[in-house]
Amino acid sequence: MVYTPGKTKPRTKRTENLAGQVYNQIKTLILCNEVLPGQKLHHQELSERLGVSRTPVREALTRLVQEGYVSLLPNRGFTCKEIRLQEAIELYELREALEAFAVERAVENITDDAFRKLSAKMSLYGQDVQKRFTRDRLVYDQDLHLEIARLSGNETLTKTLTQVFERIILKRRTDGLYDPARGVKAHQEHLRLLQAIKKRNAQEAVKIVRAHIRAGKNNVLFDLTQRQEIRVFRQTGTVN
Image 1 (spheres, rainbow, N blue to C red):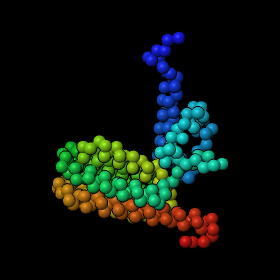
Image 2 (cartoon, rainbow, N blue to C red):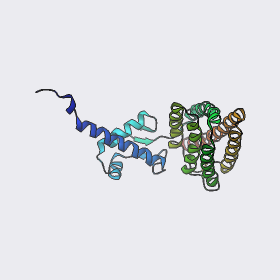
Image 3 (cartoon, rainbow, N blue to C red):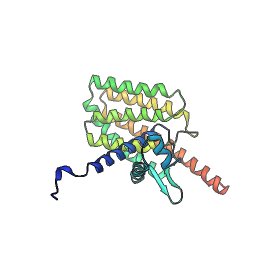
Image 4 (cartoon, rainbow, N blue to C red):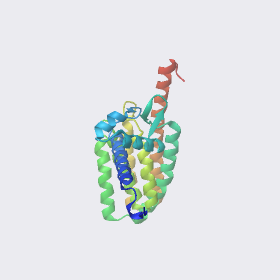
């Protein structure tokens, strides 16, 4: 039989496409708080919910494990992974470095139309800070900062920062321990950043965004530290 390159493995390609679709669907479930950090991910439940067999579900979960969004523990199966202290520190350090450069370039490239679009995204965040803290606010914040990254004109930077935000949002819990005053302060910092960009003051804009990211980092680390202490107390009955 003659081997014909043009007719290779269409079935495999369809399987790969399905696994990719399932992967995106499961990530969306996590992003929309349908699946929470720390929650188990059952093959059968997901396959029934998404209307597919267990094979693409297993492939999607394995990919999510490799990317750090899901953990696979012996005898416990797949679990939606919660962000850990060291990972949070590293992600926020990377955010600061990327966004300092992005803001500096955005100031150079800003136009009136771009400024109006940025202001609109900032308003969405400002409207949300009066509400209970949810994943939506994290998404509003992400959209605002990614808009600044896009204004830098550096696609690689924007893509990398998108991945950083994705890891922060998908693995961040929004229940219980969040400081409600942080949202208001963050919005005030956003507004100061907007004014610095409008005035094309790159030095001030970089200073503001660095302080803003560090304040957010400190808030997240405090939250994670509290959660760790609660876990230790439940396991041992003692506080560190």
